[in-house]
Length: 548
Ligand code: G6Q
Image (cartoon, rainbow, N blue to C red; front, side, top):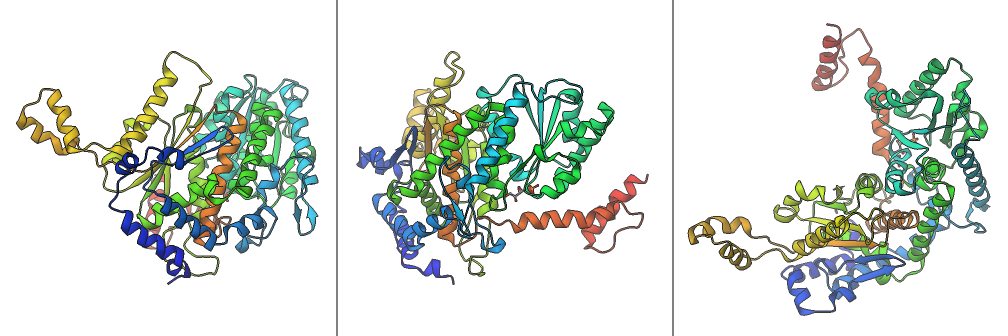
């Protein structure tokens, strides 16, 4: 048994769960008209309502004890101060330095990382200006109209999500595209609609060795050379975002078009680094800097606020409450903002790749649940598909609803309707519908007693289904920065309590290794025989079908 599940704070929470288990949120709201005031928090324009949870002042106290027991305060400082908290890779974790303002100093092994960060930001600014104003042009002298990010995972999901989220701030003259899949369909469907003379490729890869990215980048390189008729076009039509300067130079990208970052920036935390260049090109460097400023504001809050008033800490502890004491199976991210439609996918990687671990920092297997499955979809689309399961399914799904108070596009009653749907869902999930209420409704509809009896069980909603709601004034770059940093820190807090390393990803590395070792067998004339019977048969089925 691990120390955690035997610790005083854990055992106290277990006991508390048994006691609180009988109370419903409906009764909690009824008993306390101040419940929202007690369980909500505002940081700048970001409002978190966490009152619709199975949660009392005692829950908050016990969860906060758990955080103190894990020495969360020390771990937070360790991260910001450049300690090598990514122990299995012996790396510091300093994505927060990337959004620190000019004039800050962040030491790593006694050396300030800020001058390097500022140098790359300055390089990004110049490049963005020159591409956006047409000073920097393609091989045939035409200004760029399209930017294609070639990258995968952490080198794609963040910029892709942010370019969509900040679309209202995007340049109409410079379209952003994202190619990530090794499936040739991905790059081919992009190339089909693009003009090589006006297309700029950003090869985004921390390692510059990832099979998907390098293969797609080579396909793009061949396309440019063939269409523009010269190898020299590569230097003008390609830039690289990477830590591997040797490999970028081998690819033929001139040093001035290579945007560096460092091994202390994890892939899924790299949106703030040169990996953010597609965002900066799309919305302009000033707006990108606003995104960094929003994240920095959240960093300051995270570092200084007491745990009871600390937004990332509160969200993390509530998540732990359900994960470890209610056996909740998954958590849905439900943005009522079309621009945030890729946010669930982004958070899926951030949290599942960070905390989907089962061995703790002391190399011991854990005996408690770690990260849950994260999923979601923009509202109101999700309402017409999977919300059924959230309302009436057999397993607890907890939820985060996110919504802007105002829309970028005031059109009729659209935005009021969007918000009405959002709030109605959180209310219904909390309240449910009792048999009496359902019966009264059916009576009003004029149904016979027999028809009511037949329908009634299906019309009852258990309620007591937890949700958090995050409201912000408008989805601008600053707010998006705050939101991303909020979830990054939430993820970190959970890892600290669970005593796991949120910053390695051996499962992802495993996948990379497996695919490359199997590839030669798909190109071989001989049938495969080195695997289990299933894998051999799958390979051999393809070989036999291809040769027909
Ligand atoms: C992120 C992961 C993973 C990584 C991709 C791309 O934290 O490690 O998603 O970002 O595998 O890696 P490269 O940037 O090295 O190509």
